[in-house]
Image 1 (cartoon, rainbow, N blue to C red):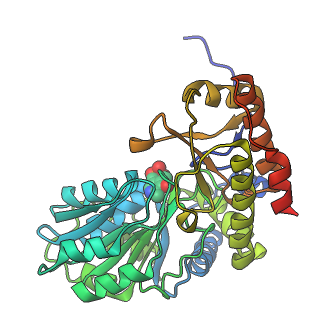
Image 2: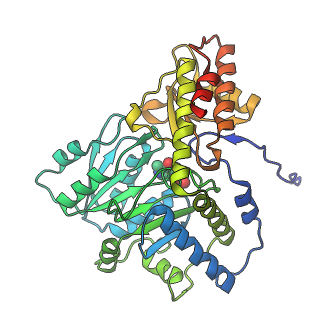
Image 3: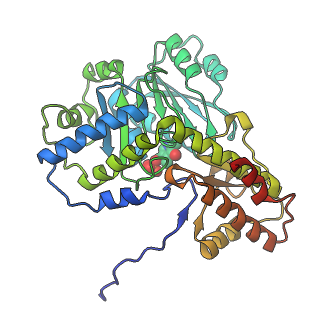
Length: 389
Ligand SMILES: *Cc1c(COP(=O)(O)O)cnc(C)c1O
């Protein structure tokens, strides 16, 4: 073979559904010298990562740590550990990721009941209550921030439903962690997972998870071992706990990366960080509306880190995204499922949620659409600037 040249990846502006732009200090942390996974230095890193993760999740849960793998590995971790064959699982579906949860639960041998709402709407707790009537459930599962549609669903009503059913509440927080307040303890969440490449602005590769006391008890009292050895939380907990028992080699440098990403989030302050995501999302939506574009998600349910935009009549999806990428180096997301070819997804996540990116995205989109004959209603830059102040 001919030897390939060393890689020189292009420097993109990542404004899609993830991965988001990596913070420069996170990139530097990733490039730091690799040490052994039982090196005293590294054990200190693990303790700090865990302590910071608890803060960002809003929990005192002992069993809180990043799993090796992406967000979907976090999803799988909760289900393989907490769901035994024959368990009954109620899953709300309003996009891709609720559907994935249901599929993973079925593969664990659960009896799964799904409750769908139209994509672009928040989950409907009354509809789930109705569907659960007269039945018992072990688990209620839901996606907090549905990245496929840009919808945020409040957790409290689902905790109340899980209480009525005597069930545990499992939550997908892949796009909420670090971008939207979660409050794991405040909302009585029993199991939660996330990823690094959305609002934490770290490359993909780790899946932070946290389990309540109740979930831990359920895991301890399983009749059968979890079918996944790699994701077995009792075994991994022994490495993250005081025993430091080897299970698998931790992805050392990724842990440096998340250490820095969590540190940045806490240094900024979580309330300020969440407020920043809201402010920039509002500026973006003001600009998109001035462009004359429609936002399918009702205002009260919009997810600040990710905005869904309807593709207008007469404009084609792919050429617009191609132009944004090739001419401006900007990546935005296409639609998924019900929104395939019908919507774009614009992410302002973590370090990517900046005034610069709001104006850059609006300006580039305006230029691109104008070149295709689209007439803007107003001035998107002025509309966004008015919100930014
Ligand atoms: C991205 C995402 C996932 C999957 O994460 P991967 O890192 O792609 O495995 C799951 N749930 C939600 C809500 C997501 O946004």
